[in-house]
Length: 162
Image 1 (cartoon, rainbow, N blue to C red):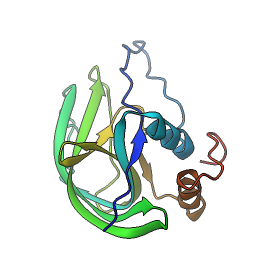
Image 2: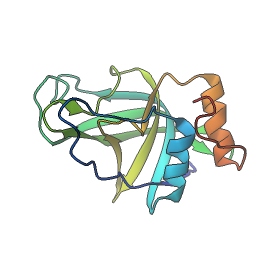
Image 3: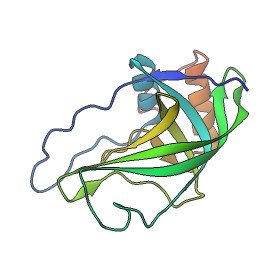
């Protein structure tokens, strides 16, 4: 199976947020793709479903600044032929929190997602930060086509639909 990796941006360090709120940019697939492409890290873009223990911290309300949760992703990896090649892999959800109030999150287990998975040694990691950048819920056919266009050199403009 051909696995196509895409370079994406390393997670930016989060500065301490104001006491009243955390301010995040609206998640955008093209922005995430471009950040991935410009990074020294290597990522794979996968369209599929995550399986994980939804009762694990921080999903159960127990907060820590960072938590690693074992998970599995089943789906199709982005390559020159679009999302054509099947993948089923154990991964790690790397959940980060800012203070005690804001943590990264994942959709319900089994939900259809598009995930940007960072290659770490022999494994794959899904970084879930308080400001979501690497996981998108139930992407539309237009969004799937848009990321495939980004990959094949087509238009890839942030803020242009998703």
